[in-house]
Picture 1: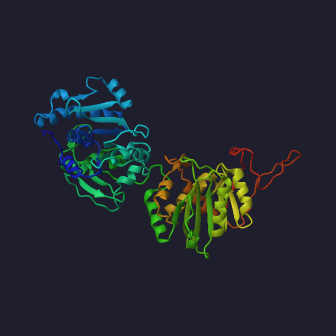
Picture 2: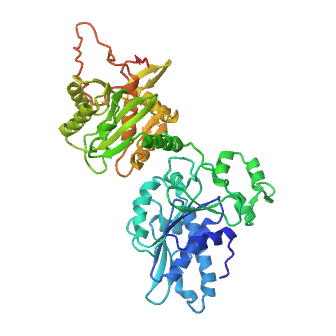
Length: 517
């Protein structure tokens, strides 16, 4: 076939032919869309009646794909002996202006059809990369620029069944390293630390812990393959190193052309240190459980070390509602060891309290810290039940404290001490994917912290339980509580366990408290 492909494009097409899933980690403008168009047409030709679903987060990329398919169809058909005639190939975008084509894309009706005979056709359907539009298709799948697809993990869960139905189907993806290291594509594509790639015109293959086969083509690889970078003024080819030197944003250049995965973004817990905490947790026997407590979990608790429990409650049990998170921590030689991280859903407050009473009776904690921000009455009742056997701290995230002379909300303070324990390599966490995914939902936001919610309703609940437990370990035993009280004829009696009538309270009116920690 008379198609000019770079050596790395031919290598990807050859090496990925028999792979069920693969990833193209290619430099910007390296020919990903052209390669995908060629691959889509080959699938259409080889499998009469097939559907190729191409999802992109960019309207421009979607249009580019259709135009390149239309251009490539004639060249491919001309090289197949009497297999088809020009009239057998049609696109519903032919002859349309930009606006009409964009409308087709937005309505998920943008298609290129290859007619094998009068009744059989193969199609490439271009859809928007969103969770809602990914369902209802079956066949080959191409996902472009996945690093820019918002909530890509949920989208991947929706699109995976599309190609899993038939062993002949394939899933190809393409991206550059995402800016935010919390993006699911970062986890899929990041190469092992210390990996060194020698420049090659055919690119380099590698596989990481995700098990995905990845074909990498950096600017240096593309240069050897004859795909150059050009000076912004003279428009003459220049070497990649000179192109980087002239770039205003070198960090962006490293991502887009050097394919360097950098720690950062808005995720509060960096992936590398989180993995190190989980490696240490595996060595120290930390475990994760969901919905049911594992037998003999308390046998992992060493009675010679202090124990604390952090709780982030949610008294609901719907499939996508937030679960309750519980963390049982011990301070072992300066390490915050999460002996157990547990989460569960229940709409029965009595059942929830019973589970927590069981955990406390078996763990024998010195202190229990309970988030009472949205479940104040429930938390107050639980505190009253637990106080005969342990100290209980009720946490209201909106309250402000003074720490090192700086005023901040309690939520910000607790988030910082939780993240610091992990970044300082003093945390040992269960080596469970559920823990890693949940901790990665915690984001830095306007100087504080905010939690995303995934498609299953998880909301960083185990991280919140962990940070509450760290706080409980930092708090001295028998910590006194102090609050402002109005004096005079209209004074209101203060009851230790009575919470404000408003579940949310008024954070602006809450007095500041000096924190000694």
